[in-house]
Length: 368
Image 1 (spheres, one colour):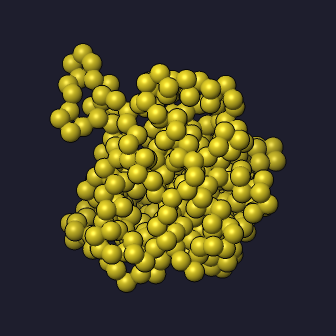
Image 2 (cartoon, rainbow, N blue to C red):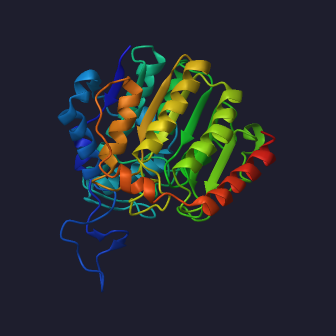
């Protein structure tokens, strides 16, 4: 079967207004000539463009999806939130939550972004595709049931999951979030449930600052079905693979979901403006391989990825291309132009021992 790639031009048209990185342009904060919010369309557009230029997109099932309906959105978000969002959108946009600005038509674009995740997940679960990637924008993993935040206007993955569960396409779903920021929204939505396991590997105390503790394991029926793996800044390539091999993957195997969903942020990459984690193109390639092997073992290969963060316009396309090459089994490569330099910049032995010790401590606490 084929690998799917879900995208829509309208998602590149989402805008957040006049910013200089994370700061609204005002007072002594000067406008940026080519700037604005780090969450710009360029990293995503250039990702898709690189697939076209190398020819990899011709080996994929490139397709769109219908926008999520109000009924779809109501499975997660209350009507009062949706109505407020729609009214702001119709009036020209604004800032609806912490670090969550948008322009006119933002509601419709967000519904389209949700639709891409829904379409990708449904196609995988129906057996129409081997696996799939949704180039969703705006992202979704910070949005809680009733509060957009952190560039995330709607909870893309959570809404897709609820549609799949209600439609009888799955009974147990696992979400692995390797965005550099904690997946607080996805966590909050499923925190008291056992039918969805959520795992987040993230930079400790990045965003949101007060979320993502290892001790947060879920509650009620969901106790033990949420797992946070906070890593210290500068953790690097080997630490990510170690955390995956020794913590995340064993937890996923024990849970035995019907499908694995990756909240795929590329902002753990070495030169990302909003992260300090030292990952490389090969980090994302190897993590994708790890999850694919596990999915083959436990859920007939059913795997879907939904795009989250990643703000280096130059480097994200190479990270994304590597992921798509692995998902599809293609021989078409886009070599990392910074590979030699970034390998030299990886953490030294002393730092690696420290991070490995942190991972070992989490393993002991989980009795792995």
